[in-house]
Length: 228
Image 1 (cartoon, rainbow, N blue to C red):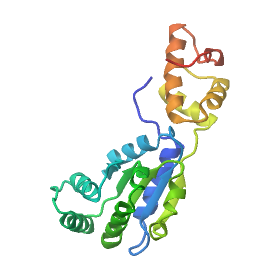
Image 2: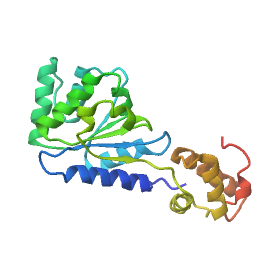
Image 3: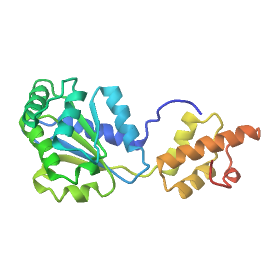
């Protein structure tokens, strides 16, 4: 398979959400949420956007404390870590006020165990005007609604969707060196439930199997067992 990043509909949805946040007027909400079931390529899309656009990317940790969160943020802003929470907070607000930069926080579900971390992020957003884009699992929106003062600051909430049959064909055309039958794409959608991660595993397996058997296309009869 070709080693390249595929721009899926979910990637486009994420970029659209980022553009929405960055074009909001001063004083309007600047938080966004991109959420969905596991395996839809949310993290891959977020990391790709971070690299392409030079946005800040953080991966939330289960054991995050306020100090740890703030110092991780300062590190990604190329600032020195601070021993005191107050100093770390004030420096983060100062840097993001002078040089705003979209901050992506992946695996935001790990932050939901401590409302003070979320409230600290909200305070930074309020004081600096800087935008934050949160990436979460399928229950993230429901859980965040439990923090009404935070949720009211979301400019937009977008759900990642399963990869459909037509998009499976598009992905195959861009990555595989052996063409895929439409019927094969239909079968792949059925057995993967449109999960990007599973589709990529299957596509690699099916392409190798087609090559090994000197086949000119990836036909549906190749789907006879779970890929190794």
